[in-house]
Image: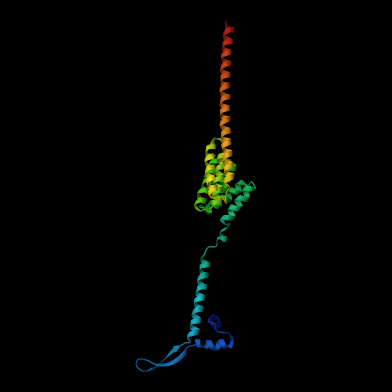
Length: 254
């Protein structure tokens, strides 16, 4: 205990600006109590003790510093360590993306779902789940994840993830010939996003996509019209053929 006290005194001396060695011990001897003769209320002699002022101030500074360190240590010990709880959210998302690129859809989905459950308000895992469902051909669930990704990203001001969510929805719509109007609407929304965030997405590229969709829509309309005409002509030919056959049968019956 005496050694600890001596070490504290020497440390306090350093904080107080007192030099070390024999001079330190001489100056800090004042930390011992010095008796001073006084008298009490009835005149009997008593003793009170005083100490040297400067060493005490340095000691108080040392005690304050040690208390601060102790409090910080307790806070650190009480704080949970996320590294001990398993992979972090970003590690799970990265694992899901790597498995997706490698074609391991089951493993990618497992990692992405674990990430989404760990951080349900983060958009990245939902974008990955949207990619998985789109590749699997599940358009409805893919749209749900892409929409969730875009909404969460916009709320968190994560523009790159928001762009991924919007582009994912556009891809789902483009893959379905029956949803060209939805694809055009989504591309128009994507164009507004690109114009507001040119550092994330090129507005010129999106305009090109929109023009392509317009051309595809026109082509589909022309193709549908041609198909209808062909079907109508085929029906007319079939009707004429039936009439001719009926007339031939009537003549033969006579």
